[in-house]
Image (cartoon, rainbow, N blue to C red; front, side):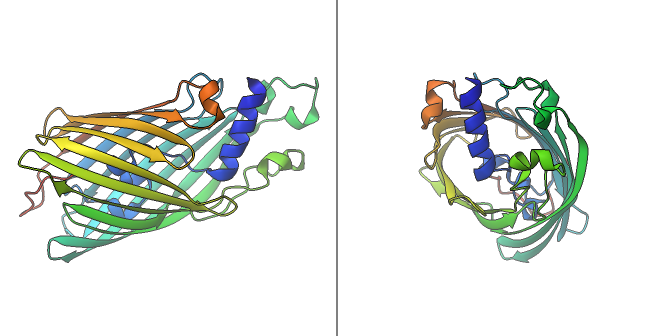
Length: 302
């Protein structure tokens, strides 16, 4: 089990270092700072992802995002807190977002910037090694901090969106210790995201929203997520997703009130991981408050 986990984690880190989300279409600020202000009032969302349940040391990710337009409607601000843990490695990120929005009829063209700090901890001394006293694992990495910067562009209305972003552009080395160079060689590489979606009317009380997310990073093949979500009576979302050569899953979201939503998703791995893991679970809670901007009446579908 430990060997399989090590191989899987190594592969995942080389392919996709940034956290991934199944409910990305409801949590866009984590990927694109240009999304800030899109709710037209204060929007607060928390998400917890537990990946590859059944593995000891499997990845877990928690995020908390908040964003809002300012009194000047063209400007919006936001912030994000992240915690991402896999095996002995834990990363924290504290990011601030600012977006400038150009109103174009019923749509908006938004340009966003993201900046902040990442903090990394590696508790390698807690690992059980095949060779007792292995010097490579006799030291921890405590509170290594690095500045980060990102950007995003998004064009959206109440029915559709398309955006491109790189939330963390600066390349950083995880470790400065030569003995850990076999782990730290790639460092933190920039990740690029292309996302989009559209909401179709299927009748008076039903809607259909397909979405996509394309992910690119140096040294790894292109990856993408596809999802199909149906909205019933403006209250309940139910959908399915496919992550290329990685997983299939289902997701649901319920609007408890106009201001409070809860969401859940489940991923089933398509790789050899399905012999060891019970899949991945993701829970999201969203809350919006404050009055919408003057003249805004349309509901938000993403």
